Image 1 (cartoon, rainbow, N blue to C red):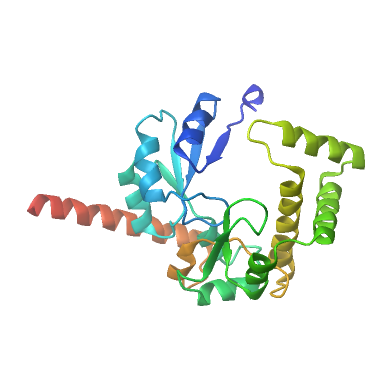
Image 2: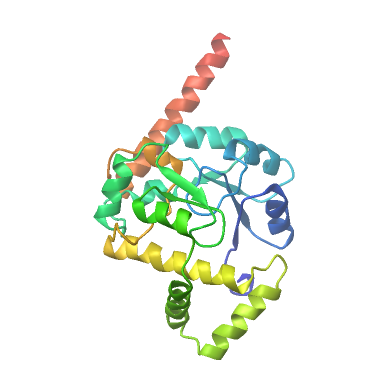
Amino acid sequence: MHGYGGKVLGTTATVRHAVRAEQLGCDAVIVTGHEAAGHGTIATSLVLLPMVSTPAKVPLIAAGGFYNGRGLAAALALGADGISMGTRFSLTRESMVHDNFKQLCLQATEQDTLYSNAFDGMPGRVLKTRAAEKMMKGGIQFTEALRGAGEIRRMLKLSFWQFLGLSLQMWRAEEGSPIWSQARQAVGMRRHLKAINDGDVNEGILFAGQDCGGIDDLPGVQELMDRIITEAEAACDSLQRKRQTA
């Protein structure tokens, strides 16, 4: 990447991994809190960001729980240089997420997500639906795992033996995951695509953060960006006034 002028962003969910990502040469590090959609761990953004910002020398991007300007101002105060907003941007007019799941997210509260490793083999957060609840109760079916792995292999345009070799390489890597865990990841990806592309509320699952409970509209991206900047500036001004009158 660096050889042709590219930039590398590492995505992490623990202090140790964030520090290691910088040591390995990442140009910036995304720090993912428990509140996030997808794959955070048990530490929240409020805890992680100050701990990572102390040793970090590269820019930090906060992920998990951020959806408005006040969140941006808070992240900056905690030591981040910016924020990542997966759930918020998925709920915009330009987003490719199917409208069925956009509407489910708009109706959800901060309590309407599920956190488990049942969805793709890694601890992660999804929108609470019947399909997601069923996966938590029943685990994963072997035939579905094989079907999901096959679809991922075709997406990657790999032969069977190339795919098997890649799986073994991942398994042997530092902190690698076993073959069964990789099969679960394939199932999670398959069901996630069913939600995004097809709007299948019976079989699909959507990775979504707790902040979906604070989102109640579908703005355009430019409108959202302008709003967030205005809110963040107002929040910073409010803090400055409070400091002056303290």
